[in-house]
Image (cartoon, rainbow, N blue to C red):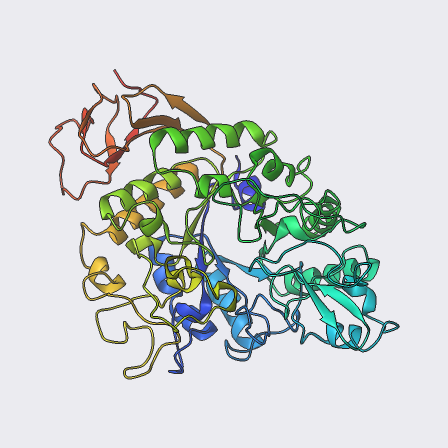
Amino acid sequence: MNAHAAGQRWWHGATLYQIYVRSWRDSNGDGYGDLRGVIGGLDYLAWLGVDGIWLSPTMPSPDHDWGYDVSDYLAVHPDLGTMDDLDELVAQAGRRGMRVLLDLVPNHTSSAHPWFVDARSGRGAAHRGYYIWADPAPGGGYPNNWRSVTGAPAWTFDDASGQYYLNNFLPSQPDLNWREPAVHAEFGAILRFWFGRGIAGFRIDVAQGLYKDEALRDDPPAGKGRMAGRSGLTQVHSANRPESHGVFRDWRAIAETYSPPRLLLGETWVSDLARMAAFHGHGDELQLTFNFPAIFADFTAGALSGVVAETLAALPAGECPVWTASNHDISRFPTRWCGGDEAKARLALLVLATLPGTFVLYYGDEIAMTDVNIPAGGSRDEISAGVPAATVRDRARTPMPWDASPSAGFTAPGVRPWLPIGEHAGSNVASQRDDPASTLRFCRDLLALRRAEFGGTIAAYTQLPGPPGVWVYRAGGVVVAANFTGEPACLGELAGPLLLSTSRAAARPEPAGQASRLGAWEGVIVRGGGAVT
């Protein structure tokens, strides 16, 4: 791919880094991360080797869902900074060769948004049609059986008008009505506002949820599975409607009027890879879609290689896959997949970073940061209310440990952070940055190799034969062998010089740099088109 084409599709082969802003760096000593903290960390991100950053919500919000309940789509949350701060962040990131994506929440607003404040003032209000209202069922009660993500009914009664409004999340997050043309016009203006300020694109929250069944039919019971959720229902009618694709075609047309085109990355929370791939349309909808079947796959060679093969087969030709394993809504992968085992975490990083497409790191992944236990009563997340302690989302949202000090370098000494800091004395950015054998240094080397091999491309992928429990594949000009077992594995020999290993050993015994034996949970990258011999 030539340099111009690579610049136009800069996310091909790129690494994005998700920053949960409140938990990354606190610049003013109030216990909450902020935009100036992100600016202060840009040199670190440039050193690490990322190509872009995705900021979790930065727009004004009452924070019932920490920014995912937006009260103003055209401003910056005052707790996080100012518009000038965000503009400076975009400019400073650009000087370091990094682009900035924001989080966009089009499925719902805050109940404090002026649109909804007006909408609930009466049935004839100017913005009434911006939201989904329904009369009680015959005989009274909820309009249908829809449930929110909390498991509660997805309808809240409005005493003043005698109707229910839909909230697929908290009652303070009323769902927008995408059958209303004015909503489309509002969001077209929102996209143009931010794109015009230099924002490189959006991660789109609840991308599968925008449209709802016009007849408000009941959802059917859910099957079993990790993505079934707390509602006990399959969202056939309360989300996942085909009309949503038209929204993304419209947005893609807007994105393509900019140079380079702005990026649309969908939170496509679906369990079927064909449905995920459909959000790419015919190359005219979302450019990137999060792959939740891969995120929730078992950490085995067979399960992961299988979902990779299915993903690549499902995507339309020329479309770019996305690989990630952690985010702000789920357990961190070093806990969920690896049980805190650092060797396994390095193996996961090696595989995710050498698959074709776009790689997304969640802050702390690069140091194998694990979930942090939240004491009883210590969660700040309303949506997690009533769930088992091990599944509270705040466990994966705790402050970034920058150093071994009591405040972890996250906030000023003596300040209580908004969420507890985990055990960090032996695992933090400073200690790992000074250690050539650390996971952080390994991740930096891995991203440098990724940029050199895959930057600007969607690498060709071919799975190769290997021993049981070992995943071997060719990606572009390298071959990867990953041992997903607790026992050493004999490969015969991988032709080509060794480029990188997950092993902590400073040097490997093969004088020619060829890998013939993998340790337990070890992965290697070798040069060339060689195969197991």
